[in-house]
Image 1 (tube, helix red, strand yellow):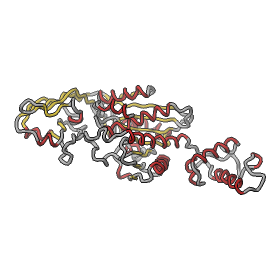
Image 2 (cartoon, helix red, strand yellow; image 1 turned 90 degrees about the vertical axis):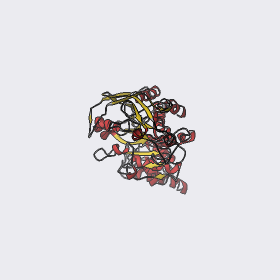
Image 3 (cartoon, one colour; image 1 turned 60 degrees about the vertical axis):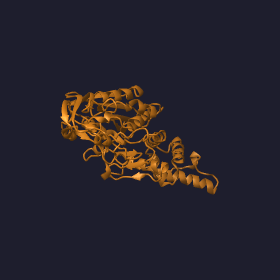
Image 4 (spheres, one colour; image 1 turned 45 degrees about the vertical axis):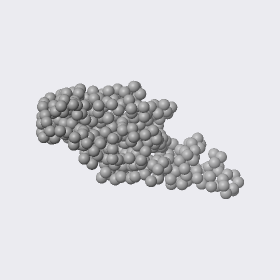
Length: 417
């Protein structure tokens, strides 16, 4: 995953355009079953409209003495996202309206966009900005904003059941390691792992989309299917650092996804940070919106917006570490493992079954054996189709591994559907 992020790091991604397609094609090499979908600019998607496509070729700001101040080829954060084309000479005074920097982080290049209002501009460190001398500058930004397409990737991994687990991540930011690329990398390798599983109880739908407009577009085209089939899922973002584990609930806060996320995090990092719905900020806003109401929660390392390097050039491989990525991958994988066995047992017998004829009841009144039989009976008491194995393990105060073993024994004896 770490190598994969490094391969993708230099690509300039945005809501649309060649960089996003190139990133999706690289992912497709690892997930060859993934399909790329193109939605034309101007398409109405709920209350939004798919924007024109943005293509950038080069950008450079040249100083009064002919020196290069910033160059897009050195760092793709140097250009305002979705900047309109420009080629002009301009005074430093007028240029300041088109420059963006962070006085509180003087060595960071900020990530700034203007998707839906036409602007041009450069982003630079505040130290660079303060060093600019009066004079005439030349600003050149070679871009196109024209009708095209919004592109997203979708992989469906069929299971035995038509019910689905949705995994979603975004591919729309330029060179930032944690905020952008940790999510797609972890999600890609989760997809590879799922494809290797010999048997899946549920189907898995994995989407790689531009944030916000991508999820809105995807929902507008697939909402009926998703509402009928999706029973759980996760928005995967910011899973590459090694500072914290975080959980942001679904809007309902009581879905299968919420229960599993809290269960997994409790055992991996008991001091994980819990956020509330008011702290939302990624695609969970769309998946859990009123009228959409999908059961999507978010499991993260340090939450977006809560680490100092967020949305700057400092979000690099000092932030995303091998240990951090491994932890982000494992917490998501463990959540999916629970979903793999997210079974809701139903007892086939009215009243208590006759356990003796099945060899599940001791013929001698021995205390230890009676306790084991009571555990079987306790399991059956909660096997009414409304409780998952995970919930039953809590109700009978037994670890999930032992609970699964009992489920197999009772199933073998034809006591469960």
